[in-house]
Image (cartoon, rainbow, N blue to C red; front, side, top):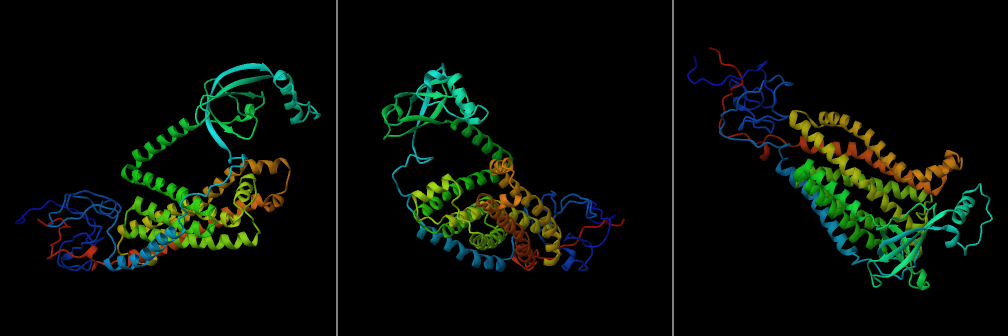
Length: 494
């Protein structure tokens, strides 16, 4: 019988492990009394987490210890004060440079221009279909000249349907703008890809220079309600699953979209260098999003540094290969319209800016994941050095590389699927397809972004391993408790 009985805590082995308290005065883990105040200890509330539960490490969890100090539960302790100063010395000047760059390049709004009435550059208003009736296509297309195309061709079949089929005659009321309440007639052909319904809300284009009866025409349907509902479901799902972290992620998403629409796009239209604007804007988005979502910690700072190095690599590779492959960035009607309205815009620079901004979102995911992996490995075994941490975390990174690169390639392929289908219909060879500028742009965009993603894994892992390994028990995060504490790790002999 011992003078002061204690709840027994059994250990399968008498050796020290991960800073847990042990009986006896010997310095089995480098601390007097066998006690360690490392971040992996959990004493005050008897709880358990990944760093303190028994099982895999041969310990059986027991009741809470009666120490006079406590440890808060969290992912990992912060690094030492000296390392925090080093990280701040690197990141603060970078953040200041980004802020100054945004101030200098701030556009103050997109420049105005006279609308051309082509493509998206049209005046639009809202409208609603008030009535719909079936009519003979021949009666509404009487003024058209009959086509000479053969009936076996798509043009011939469409012309035949327009002369012999049933068309829809829609009466549309303008519901916004100076002509609110005005009505006009829209004829819908039987083979048209967009069919109208009674009561449907639509988007109408306004051409002020056209004859009065032809000034308004339906160009699209109004999809605001389903889009808003889908966005609401997304926001609710993120908050329900992610809780406060999810809420901060949504706020960061809104801020990122604000930087894109209020700074990046107007600054490019004002004539600023697209590459410089993209680098400054992407850096601002990176700083805001990462720190808002993951906190102002050393872990987040390492992820920021890894993302920054990878973005610089993507910028250098993208610039070199876009110039070498003679990619103009002016490949379709939309880019042609932009170049026509704003001829001073560097279209190849705009292409490179798109590569950088498009890669940023996936880079954030990779760098944060790798940094967290290194921190958790160090949390599980604080005795691991930087080399061991790197080797363990890079194995996680290799799995991440395989999935992320595949995701990126498939995302670009899915976006260009109609274009690839056209090449397939034309029976073009793979060499001819890859050599065309439309596809070459996507190949350069995909491969440059993928190289940056692959490089971000070892870069971020090495940075995180060096930073977290430089923290030692003598730092404020791991200072020993005042006074020796006798170990209670073994069952007392009776």
